Image: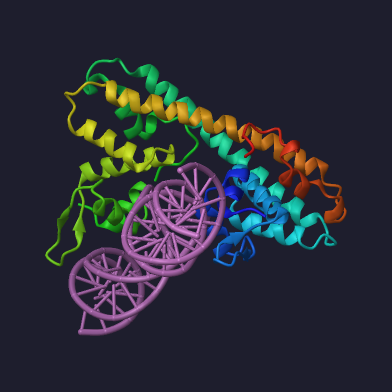
Length: 140
Length: 140
DNA sequence: CTAGTTGCTCTAGCAGCTAGAGGTTCAAGG
DNA sequence: CCTTGAACCTCTAGCTGCTAGAGCAACTAG
């Protein structure tokens, strides 16, 4: 059995975060010692590892909650889990595309900076004037 | 002179957001009508356009605040603005790299889903077991 | 002139934690 | 066995960047 600190260190999640996950119902209320301190077993270690990993991958807590409900009921169809993963994949592709055009613009900004005074520097101007923008976002 | 609603529509920023920017000092307190309603001129339109554009590009408000301070004082060296842009560029490249490995893993997850029950589905398993993870994040 | 939209201020809420106060319990060393 | 200090407890408040709502005042079009 692990204390909350050891669990946190084992999984790479901070102690207040674990308590927060319990509070919002992602983790079940654990056993307690006689002195009211939390005690965790293997199952919670795995469950928290799953949560941490999914968070690293950018899944919002709501999606993780769905995953966990599915995992708690393994006879149900895989389609739901698949659908969540597909949705996340689409969102990630979208974010990559937006970030790529952002990167292009930043590179242009840095390249155009003449290393003189602001008056000569295009960084501010590029950011202020939409006409100089190569990104995919719309004006107005 | 523009009302707050017209300014918002012109720039693509919601009305409460404009008031919020004023509250945190990104926009100066504007003129008011006799009836206490905000009135904006060209300068604020440009300034808000700048902010909106920079937000779209993923700059945090603190970085934007820095940019605006520089723009308000155009005799200073460009180096600071350049430095901010470089920092942002590095951060963006980092985010793109992380998202790319995330995309790979999600694609793998989706490809491995057997469209059967959860018991056969690797989505949950891949997320739970770090050994199946090709991403660059560390366990523990 | 009146109706309907837009504006005002203020407070509270969202995600996903993080930090602090003020106190208790546990584990290690002597 | 006792002490010390780290780790734990609960509770509240704060962070970013807004968004939503209440309850009211002012502006604009017909």
